[in-house]
Length: 94
Image 1 (cartoon, rainbow, N blue to C red):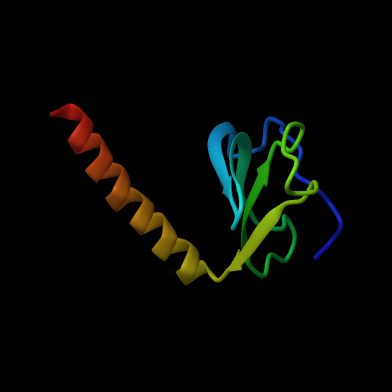
Image 2 (cartoon, one colour):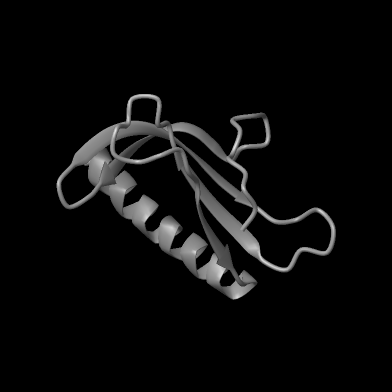
């Protein structure tokens, strides 16, 4: 994995969403950036990236989590997200 951190820009999927970093001895609320992407030329996977704003986080050094997914895996996650989004939306509509 390349040594790079995500940048919040016009191409980031979701910027500044609520997040929680949890560890054995800590739990910290933070803002985060979430991005879904693939290489522009000859893509070989879908990348799902998550980076917490660590300006106030004392337990984790600056870093980005990245999961590399096959197209089928990406579609499975997308389907699950749709299902859970519908459940939450239905619950908040009542």
